[in-house]
Length: 388
Ligand SMILES: CC(C)(COP(=O)(O)OP(=O)(O)OC[C@H]1O[C@@H](n2cnc3c(N)ncnc32)[C@H](O)[C@@H]1OP(=O)(O)O)[C@@H](O)C(=O)NCCC(=O)NCCS
Image (tube, rainbow, N blue to C red; front, side, top):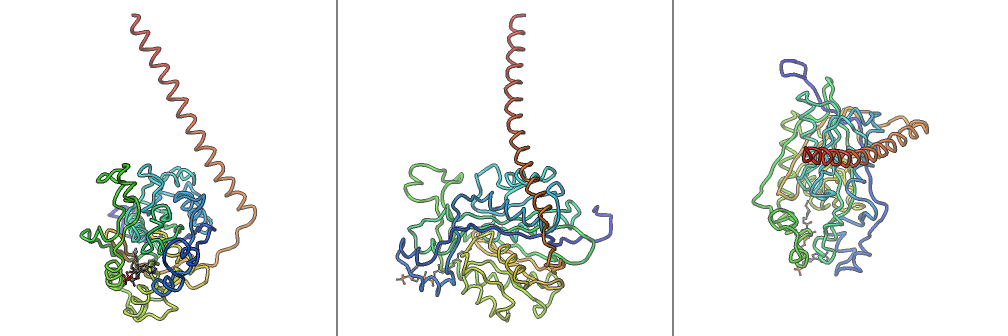
């Protein structure tokens, strides 16, 4: 929509999907590796078990979650305008994980980028995607949170290794003239607290070296107590601010979907906001903290449990490394009971993704052949010129 076109655009969530590895790591199993116990972990965090990737990577989990979201929305990959992958555990420093997902989906018309805002990443991504839709720049935006924190955890550090798990969640945002969807967002950052939660090496400041590997600087370090204090404060404030911006009174909030870091942090915020447990989504007992994936993962489970209905007011609120935080207020508009996929449609989708795979392979081969032929032609040309 151009600026002089007066009708307002809205960004609705029309598709959703999730993926978690099937491999489960329980507290008891963790207690065999580090000096901890199931009781300590449950009482201090609310976590019972988490999923740990085996063959999966951040891109593969993102892809599965995105495929589900497209299935629910009944949207084909070539309709997607933009793929955003919020992650702190990307496949590589570059290329972006989002570009890998774009290719594997066969989303030929889409731009793609990764978004680094640690555990706030999904809310940041949703805010960016919704803003682009509201500005009229794009119409279909995939926002994915995907993480394999198990690959950057120090499995000997009991203060962090008990907390995190792997997984992915995705939503498809779509533009519409109908009121609803993502109505507001609040994004915050306090970089002075960066060292409270960090992976110290592997970037331009401390590039990978034998020394950084020996000192275990490529894994998560955290000051748990300080992060806890920060989290309880910003969750409550950001939720209130997002509601206020969307003109939704706190009394009309139907569902809070918070970042799943610690049950005590969530309970504290719920109490401060005067929300009963049925209005707060908690699923970290089974997944732990999946960072940027935790909010979409919790949302999808809430939908599957039929806890989200059209007309509901929702707030997504995240916080984490940066330090960073963010909240979005939404009015849910989409029916959550979708018609079952027919075997024919499922087969069609499978074929589409297999074809995207074949095409991607074909492009790679062609690029190599093209480079080889061009190189040979240049040499022939060069030697001919030399002869003259
Ligand atoms: C990490 C966290 C669970 C620790 O809980 P806590 O109640 O603050 O515990 P403390 O750090 O005060 O440690 C209490 C004691 O338990 C010990 N302890 C720490 N981890 C332990 C574990 N896994 N098992 C058993 N004991 C443990 C500590 O060594 C400490 O012992 P001490 O009193 O002898 O020094 C909590 O601080 C937290 O959740 N913080 C927020 C972290 C977070 O959410 N990060 C991600 C943000 S995106």
